[in-house]
Image (cartoon, rainbow, N blue to C red; front, side, top):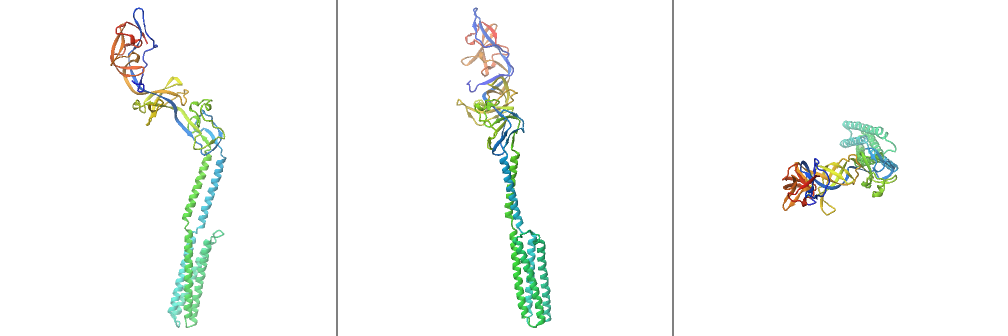
Length: 508
């Protein structure tokens, strides 16, 4: 089988064989000295082997809350920290300036919104303006009725004419009283409570109400004079003229009151400006909250338990005093510039680590997540680590020799041993378990054309035994037929043996 597709078979129970490989010698008596191994029946694990390196399994990058410089540096690279440990503190002077600016912007936005709110007429002002419109219309209606009554009563006044004039006086009195009440209500309840200098709309409304009041009083005087004229003379032409003047004046007062009301209504519609002011207040408040939060997070803390790594440090230099000189970037220091775009610290948990392996494309289909594996590290050769496959990459990688492989990540525990990030090694991934397999060392296997055979030791002689083999690896062969557990096969010097040679066996 090719080296690319080689599958290592590891014994679950250690083979009961020992010794070291050695050649054989032919003694003076014609007996071949050989080494033998016992054929065993064991549970075997079929594995896929791959090279790789140690990586962090849990790594949290730690970013500063804002751009700035470090006022303190409270840890060194390689320190073991707990979650919440202070790693460094930002220089807070620039942040405090940002807070002061944000507070000023917030106060300005509040003042602008209040100015818009205070400039708008209130509901009481609008009600007073409407009352002035109603009073002016009432005065006009009465004046128009008096004018029409005067027209109908031309000539010598009759008793009904005088009665009508008296009624007009009464109506005019009511109108004058209504106008006076509207003026006093606005003046007392709206105008006087307003802060000085008073808004121009308040001054205009008060003037309009005064004008309506004066017009109503004038109408009352005119009505009284008309009645007196009727009583004094028999010709009512003067009364008609006066009634017409009173009507025209009342209508002009109505138009003025109506214009003033519409102006107040337009001035009160500030919803758009108020919405913009509210948005400005919300934005300023958010900026202030962000600046305050930044100040509160000026201390950069570890998010998890683990080992501190500085930005750009070489993984292989972890715990090494010469790390910076061996390829890492210059270490952080007080006054160093930091930015949220780059993490100055990383916290790596060493409770569990990852082993990143590259599995040949001919073997990757047999690897599945959750499979068990062993990891052998070059730097810790006396210990194997139990691992589990946690992920299989979906995209191939080109190997250094031009082959195609796929990334496979395994997770393992370092067992308190000095495992460092970047350590190289290999892994055997258990892809299949063969129960009660009959196996022998691969050195015993011989080939003759299409047939396979071994030399078994029987009664002190080497006897050829044709066999059928199954899985084959660097170290062992699965025997499907031709041998049984307990048989002894020759593992050294087999190439020079012939069937029936006498042998002196030494167990391997």
